[in-house]
Image (cartoon, rainbow over all chains, first blue to last red; front, side):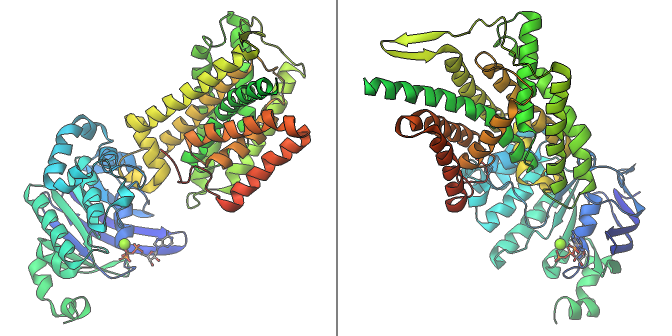
Length: 236
Length: 297
Ligand SMILES: Nc1ncnc2c1ncn2[C@@H]1O[C@H](COP(=O)(O)OP(=O)(O)OP(=O)(O)O)[C@@H](O)[C@H]1O
Ligand SMILES: [Mg+2]
């Protein structure tokens, strides 16, 4: 049984349906990418998995537990953690308080000091800036805080929504390397991206999301050389 | 001689101003987290004063010791009101960050609470008894300081300090700040938004209870006693900056000083005009209040 199993999910904002009979799954230890253009429904999918939206129909199971009718805090308690699009830091809180806010669920709170040390080891720059307000950080540093804050929640599966958004090319490379190294430590990752090349390169599998439906799926290396993807997403 | 009067008025103004700040503190906290103006705030102060009055009358405790009863009672009152009356609106208007309906409901609460007080307690003006602080004065040469106001001012600073510490240093405080800054992001961190709203409303109401305990030793209790405090609280909160704890105290002191020093130079109708003039000036020049940011915590 997959760690995360999304089955036939339909999601609408009011009368506007955005996701149609959508199914994806993620196995334990995998890195899976969801790629798709603007407005395809990627963030909607992650918001639904996190319990910010509830599906009109369909099921979501995580670790064998049905999460589709849970509130966001319930979903977090199961170990399913999202780093949202646009970082969404607590702008007027310090870097350290942002990270600590990530360790709100009981299990994470008990381990907070230890996890904080690990996060600071991964991002030494954040330790230097721990008492600075989050809004005063550069875009790259803010993304580090966003990822660090997600890690502070002790995820079993980490979902990242467009972590490369708005970053300079060098920083994009760095962020993807960081994600790869997080995955290498054994964490399961579901990555949502428009940067098709980078994200598929570090993933085992991928899904292509178009107009709220899965248009294509398969092994990442196959998708990378697929003529349709090359034309539609890589502009080759 | 004149200088003594002036010093006397300044001291009175600062003390009363800090108490005004305490009165406004709950309003600013609730706004900071829920982003909703609680039009029933004055009624919460009124409820706080009646709870203090009865806590002291029934137990014979010193009003400041009675805080041990008043604070938890008021916390539960606020928590319950948010959970039962305001939360359903937030849920119904899920996509609206600052639903107007909440303002309608809090205005309704104002009428209901004030009239309920009239129904239950009658229109009488009630003076606290036993009142160990009644009419007590400290006297430094020609300057007299009211003891209940001095205690009240100290309680105001202590309450603000405690609230600031709680928001800055505790796990729950951090969760409250996170929710006030970004509800969805806080939810994604496993913070239960509704629980935070209940607790913030409970704390804001408990602070109104502290204000009630501070006021009753020198201010009579009656059903519409909250109304002047309501209006003042709005002015103070706008002056100091919506959501700002220290801004509330500073705003309170400004109002207190205008009210106490003003009458030396002009008739007291004019001091009212100055208060509202300041209010409008701040709205025009610096709508975020004197304490600039969205929040200082
Ligand atoms: N709150 C909302 N209310 C109504 N419609 C929405 C809302 N949020 C998103 N949508 C619509 O749902 C569709 C999918 O949006 P979504 O944000 O999931 O796309 P996305 O794939 O994440 O895009 P992007 O790459 O630009 O972030 C879009 O057509 C969008 O306009
Ligand atoms: Mg998106």
